[in-house]
Image (cartoon, rainbow, N blue to C red):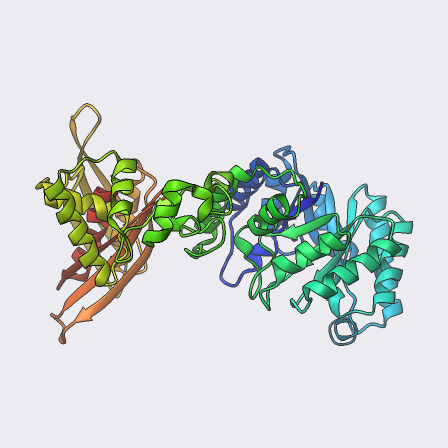
Length: 492
């Protein structure tokens, strides 16, 4: 059984531009525990008071996972970790000549001594200690063996090899971990970065070489090009290498989206396994094969990772794909309606349009002559802005509840500008209806002059459904709000 140390909340949070509040860290930690990771590296306790608050909040939950803090080989780092009631420390020591000379300004003997003293200090205070060699893949192998062996002698529980700048190759990974596994009597972990796009391959080869644990992040996030992707490594182990982990794989997609939302890092549509296109099919020959047997064009079931199969309609789609899609949606069309819908889809595809489920429903409604039922109506929008006032927006929405009783809701919100304030007020008002998120917003000018039309394009998501809406107005605020409102009604 391969153990998983998830470092989304430490290495993942070091992604440029990402900073989590304690409550956000806790929300992600709870999802990681549901996912059944073995160890959660909750952060680096020395970083700040807020970081310690977040780590302690996680430690207090009595989760099944071991809770860990990153520390340097310094007593003060370990003391701060102890304040947070963690179970273990990830004790990181630079071991390459480059790091010791220029970063630490220490000899290898001095580095070894401080590392062993820190291991002893952690063990004396009842902590599980994972002794980690930073830049290990550019370090002298004999020094690594000496560090890990002497660390194990005084109680280090695990050793970790860090490919800090992603220079390892799969072939070297197998060789390195075989050598270390044969020389050290404690479990070895692999911590790989993705600078050359080989983090997943290097991690899998490390396990082939004898590693018993790996450090991973959800969606492969992390510094620079990121870390080894948890979903990729785990599913490859389960499906291709006959190795098992404790991960509940059906929760991977859901966890991916929670991390993406809270860290404001979109998941690429073509991201393996958890991307929206990972199990999406448009080409007619592929859809035809899927209709006969899903394994023809899918290496595993999307449900195994909590994702969904999606049939995408566009210029590459055949009539069989449309029929299959309509059956899935439980929509019936007569022959004339079917041909008209198919023609419209082909025309949209030729224009480069991606046809989502919402778009298809819209086309069907147009062909059938059905008007989209607006469940929520914008009644009033007021915006106050100026050079000596923080932009403030007030919005009033009308809607009908489940019993068809007409109600209104009023919300206000501040923003960095009038558009931001308006969208924030709209988000607050809509929060009670559905979990709909704005995932993209673009604006461009059509024509010249201060009264020129502007085109606003918004993308909204509700679950797996994504809708794109364009609105043109001379008033950017109205265009933005109306685009969001139309998208919301389509999704509702």
